[in-house]
Picture 1 (cartoon, helix red, strand yellow):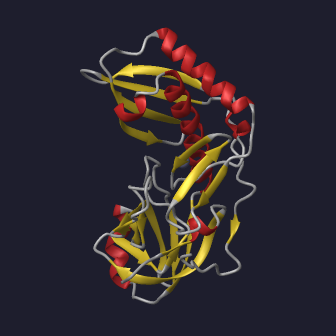
Picture 2 (cartoon, protein in one colour):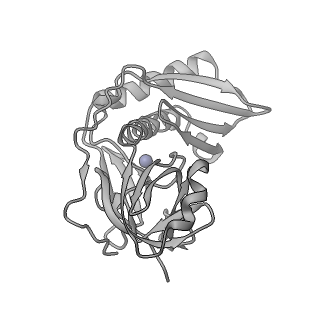
Picture 3 (cartoon, helix red, strand yellow):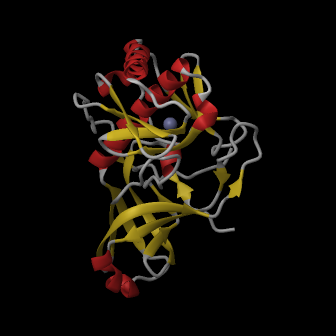
Amino acid sequence: MRTTDKLYYLDQYLYQTEARIATLHAEAIELDRTVAFPEGGGQEADIGTIETPVGTFRFIWTKRLYGTPLSIEGFTGAKVGGVILHLVHPDDIDRLGALEVDMPVTITIDVERRARLTLSHTASHFLYAAALAHQSELKRLTIGCHIKEDAARFDFLVETPFNAEDVSAIQAEANRLMADNLPIITDHLPEHIDARFWQYGDLYIPCGGTHLETPDAVGPLQVRRKNIGKSKERLLCSFDQAHIDTSAYRVDTERHVETAS
Ligand SMILES: [Zn+2]
């Protein structure tokens, strides 16, 4: 079965690599390997460019298709294998016909956006952990999450709307957790590279997203609530003093190869 090597799992700081075209789709390019993180677990997708022998193509979204669900307890959403599609900018689609399978390319992601999504995703874990610490039943009432560059949010199905005291207690708890500035561990179970998790002190959540190594760059977290319909409450966090740092990102010069362990 065809799969794409997911270099972002081997090293989340790779922003560019050489690859080959694996398959051409009507509006997307599939490579044999990629550094572009697909939309998943609420985190928005990477965007960027693919330089080819016949010109540069912009991609405006990345998504993962297929894959087999992992049968490991607690990792119900995780999948093995699958392919990664880079959705081509509408203005570049008419040039897709000039591409051929096996052509060498260089793929580069928008590293500023990735750094922002990584910070936002990290912040979202503290918002969620603080919300659950405040009201543990929120875990089973969670109906969605969305992680954007400048904010992250979780939606809950609750009978009683959050009040100002709830919001301020959750914000205080999130900031208290981050103030410890412990190391954040992003890793996978020894059984499988796709069984990924986030860990911070005693907090542990299965998660395949990208994260900072410590929370300090997030700065103070601001939490708000919003009613988004009958019994639906949203908690949002933003971080207007965040420090975005792309200095750790680098080109893949070692030709990483994914070896599913
Ligand atoms: Zn995560």
